Every structure is written in C-alpha cells, then in structure tokens.
Image (tube, rainbow, N blue to C red; front, side, top):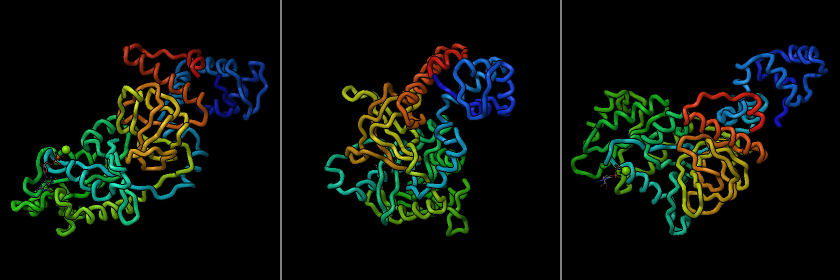
Length: 378
Ligand code: GDP
Ligand code: MG
C-alpha cells in the first residue's frame, strides 16, 4: 500500500498540514506533520473532503507528466537544475515532398558516421546522432511533419530546432508553408536549407523572396533567419549547415542533468516477433540504464537491452540520446512519455494503473476510480 506523510497528504489535498493534524486528532489519531499515515487514515481524511479530492490524488499518482517535469517535488526540481549541463540539440528536418529531406538525412549521416563505427550495418532506429566540431547533434529521422503533429498533439516537445528544406528549383510549396506553421506554433527555431543548388535551374533568390512572405527573412536582407545553400545529393554545404545548427543551439542554452533518473519521449515503437515490444526512446533528461524500471505511456517494464543508432549494445544513454529498448509489457505510442522509477514495484503500479485507466477510456466508460481501487493498484 501507498503511504503518505501528513504533510504530503495536505499538499495533495491543497490543505494546511495543521488542518489535517486537527482532523486526525478529532478522529482520535495523534499525528505530526512528518508522520506516515496508513491507508485507513488516508481514506478517512479523504472521505471527509469528498469525491473531488479522490480525483486529485489519482491524477497526482499516475500522471507521467508530473514525473517527467520533476514537478512531483520542488526539492527534486531544484536538484535537477543544479546539475544541469549542456546537452546536444535535437533536430528535425521538414519540407515539401521531394525537396530532399531523406537525401539530406542520409547525406548527413553518411558523411558524419564512418563505416567502421557503424560496423557496416546501418541500423534504423528513427533517430541518429552525429558529431560536428566535437559537438553532438541528434537528428530525428521520423518524418518531420509526423513528429510534430503526433507529438505536439500529445503535448510532447522533442525538437529544439528544425531545418526547413526548400528545393531551389521548386520554391515554396504547400507543405513548406505547413512546416513553417508547425514550427512556429511549437516555437522551434527554423534554419532554411536551400537545396538542389547543383541544378542549373536553381533559383535561391526566389526561395528567399517567397519565404519572406511567410515571415522568414534572410540575414542578408535584414532579417534574422539563417539560409544555407546546399546540395544534399552532392554533399555541398552540409558542414556550413551543421555549423549553423550548433550556432543556433548555443543561443537556446540547451541543458539537462545526466545524474537523475532518465525521462523522455517515445519516437517510435512496434511489436517485433522475436524481441517483443521495441521502442525508440529519446532521453531528454537524466540517464537511462539497462535494468531500469520504467513506465512508458501505458506500458511498463525493465529495460532489458538497449541499442544505439549504430546498432551497438549500450548500457546507458544520457540526455538527447536516442536508443532502442526492449523489455516493455506492451507497445507504447509515438509521443508517449517515459519515466524511470527507482523501484520496480512503483513502476509496475503506475504502469498498471495507467493501463487500466486507458482501457476504461477506450471503452468510453466514465472513470469511477475511488481511493479504494486506486490503493489496490498502488
Ligand atoms: P523528400 O521527399 O523530401 O524526402 O525528398 P527525397 O530526399 O526523396 O528527394 C527527392 C528527389 O530529389 C530524389 O530523386 C533525390 O535524389 C533528389 N534530390 C534530393 N536532393 C537533391 C539535390 O541536392 N540535388 C539534386 N539534383 N537532386 C536532389
Ligand atoms: Mg523522404
């Protein structure tokens, strides 16, 4: 059973601890603020405050976002911030179909990841990491639009920066405009890669002109948007592009604390016949370790094996690192949060509570979760 101290219960109920102590006294229980209350005592107090209070307790206990943000505890928040260090930027590539997104992703990966490192096998895990001038950059290679729409719809922010690819021989097209509005809504900075510069019909001025109409004004024209002419096909301009990515990232002061329990977002997940549920996770804060008890969306488990973007087995993964893991009891969804817990029991309890809530929701049944069955699950 879950236990709470008087102080913790007071906080969950948004009451003064003294009020709780008084109520307990009336009920014949002598208690101090740091005293642990058993389930009966908690129930007595909650019953006294009514149904809404039960709802409050339930949400606190199972909302992954609480643990993700570290907001379950102010002390925790302060501790997290104290240990913050620089982390690599997480970048997505967006743009109109056929403007060269896939070619650019491949080109960056091929020029920056040596064959030896990859062991000759190109592992696809939906994201990869490269190094430019000694600094790491993480690329999500899920389709940019999808990453934005599904993940943003679910409230998850994973991207620090987006590269907008516009073919110089085609100019601004409908999905270009769409990409701009996604990035703006998510308040993610945009770098424009003017692609296919190797083509004789390339007209970068036209791209600049057309983007001006969408609020992206080049630095050359007095604006603050960085434009980099590239040829994804030939590999021209890739280094300049990556340098600009690092430059813009520095302004964003991206930080995370590698010393806390891992937490982040699911990039993609599927059921593998041999391995079971396989999920690509982006660690956004803390460090994820093999063996960690973890809740991922409405699933849970222990991280059984972890492989990186080069297909290598790794034991741990720090902030901004994408890894593929196995060991979950089900297949989570892209955009789901994951959080590591100190003990396996708590991960299981929260995972099971979340799964049954999701099931109820799916069935369209009204959620009638009382403290009783909450504590049965805890
Ligand atoms: P996506 O739909 O945005 O992923 O576009 P792709 O990467 O699949 O590219 C569409 C087509 O444009 C392919 O035939 C590529 O070979 C070609 N392409 C991409 N980048 C360049 C480039 O820099 N120069 C030229 N000439 N062709 C390119
Ligand atoms: Mg493509």
